[in-house]
Image (tube, rainbow, N blue to C red):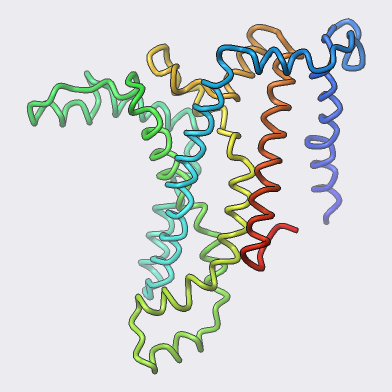
Length: 285
């Protein structure tokens, strides 16, 4: 049963690592992945000295950190709320409602954002006009881009991400709640003293994993939301790698940038895991 999953991971995650050597070679399509002149750290130095380096790092880090600060606690809150609902039908209905957005395609989500936030035909623009406020081009203003991206991500994925916390809460011994009720504990006190302590190990593990992708903002949604007006804050490492590597055909340069991004994420993962290991009994290793 494990063999198919092992083969898939081997084929699509480990074998492609062979191509990382392109970050240290001047890629020549005629000579394949093993061909091309060895140039060492030339492409890394080129990226570090680029005028876009700090802008890319700042944009990627700010969007990722914003997403982590806002998106990480919301699934926990949803799980705690669902755990307090005793009516099974009501609970199933609410879970279905918050899970459905996860299955909407990224293209559809971005299309909805563009239509809803349009200053001329959008619902938000029309509501602002009703109150005598000049409609705002939200998708074109740099100060709104990060909030729109993060809030739409939370709306789409928070419910689905709460499943693992709901599963963890389902493992709590019901006798703990009964004992708490006998002692006169309110629902809020039960959440604070039973639910949250039980979730802490799961929270720490997921926090470590999320921190390990701090500079790994997803490509698809960012790219679809980009336009010439919000580009100063929406250009991140993933989209830059695509434009440099695929559109500009600078394969070795884009490989070096992607490799640098991966190593930074791995370093952050190691640091956060070590901090968690020293401050608690929970860590990845």
